[in-house]
Length: 337
Ligand SMILES: [Zn+2]
Image 1 (cartoon, rainbow, N blue to C red):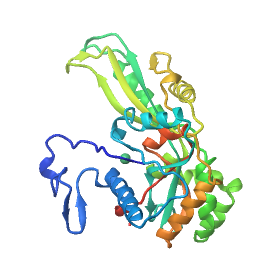
Image 2 (cartoon, helix red, strand yellow):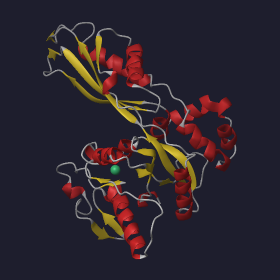
Image 3 (cartoon, helix red, strand yellow):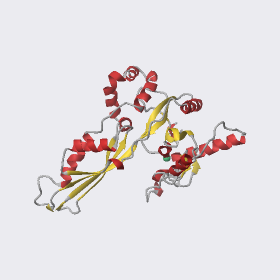
Image 4 (cartoon, rainbow, N blue to C red):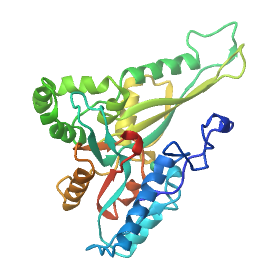
């Protein structure tokens, strides 16, 4: 799988690009442009590989399907969704789907000096809620003890200070178990004994945004709105919060957490469990398909270790979880080397 579309550039930033963003300029040994890595690299590598194999007279033992959507960046409804639906409707069994997501990464796991080929077994979900506070309006010369923005700010501070609970269960533990034997002392011992050291490891993971996002549903306050004039009290204040769900957490878990943490009946929570897009199912590392991937990656990257990972962004792969037995997310991006 790969997607053909790319995201736009911010209006007015054309001049900031070393090479025009949509030129595909080839210079200094690189292809320059928006989307060169996401996801034209994978798209062209797949086509190039197939053309070479076809020219060689290669005949695959199994059927290969190519799924190249053109709207991944806006949800995939008219691309990957339709392709996956079509495959299901025609009862075409898919052993596994391989999409973008993770790559060969350097220096991301403490204590591991070798590059690590991370294969995404699942991707996180997403849920957006709004919080609103309402107070009496009026002139700023006679403010109440607490204003709508003040009440909302208090709630937001509580939410940031009290993240959703973290856990190593599932993919993080699988990753650590695989990497532990390759870690330096004492990280190897700590990692090999998670039954004893889990709290310590969770603290470590929580310290950096990149690792924190692997072990918990994250909370991101993204938009704020209140007031319209410098000397008028805002009657309402509103915040938008985007959560990225780890496998196992539901929209209801988030709503319960928010209600409990905010602990303020005067704050209205706008959002329902149905609006949450949960994390994808977790693909197997015991399948024949995963062994094929392992062997191929070992051949291409002999120095790299291999570990399962969790994709924290969204890919078209999530639309294939019903059509395929397993969905893996891995492609090598040149920048990671
Ligand atoms: Zn992409």
